[in-house]
Each structure stands twice: as C-alpha cells, then as structure tokens.
Image (cartoon, helix red, strand yellow):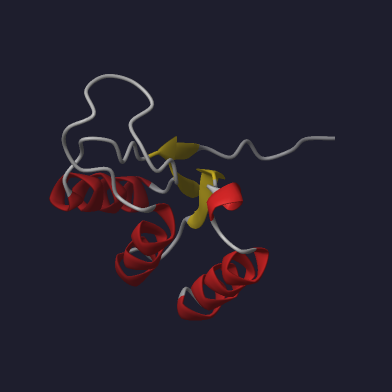
Length: 99
C-alpha cells in the first residue's frame, strides 16, 4: 500500500508584512504545495514585541482569495480569547468563502 506524501508550509505571521505573506503563499501555490498554515497568537512568541502580528482568521480569508490549490488552516488558534460560537462562525465563513 502506498500513500501520497503531502507537503505544506507555515507562513510565519510574526513581524512579516502582508506583501511578504502574500508572495510566499503565491509561490507555494504555484509550486503545488498541499497546504498553507499560519497561527493566531495574539502576542509575539519569540523575539521583539514590536512589529506586526497578522491575525490568523483574517489572514486565512485573504489567502483563500488569492490561492487556488492549498488547504488552509491554523496551527494554533487563540480559542481561549474568543467565544466558541464566534470561532465556529469564523471557521464556517472561511469554509464558505474559500470554496
């Protein structure tokens, strides 16, 4: 029995600009990667606290609009900071807008 190996990429949202994330996602999509991941930490997890940290759900929605192939997901969701109903609504909306 053989199984297809799937390859994905983590798009690190801490101190990265949207153009950098966007360009990396487009390169990954063109290269045929199976999935793209980001995370939803609300504060820096390493290094300096200054600089942007893109919010995970919004970033995934933006990625859904510009990519065609990869599955999108959060490696870490800040679930304790959001009402479970809101988290469910974010996930279902992303599912609908991403096709």
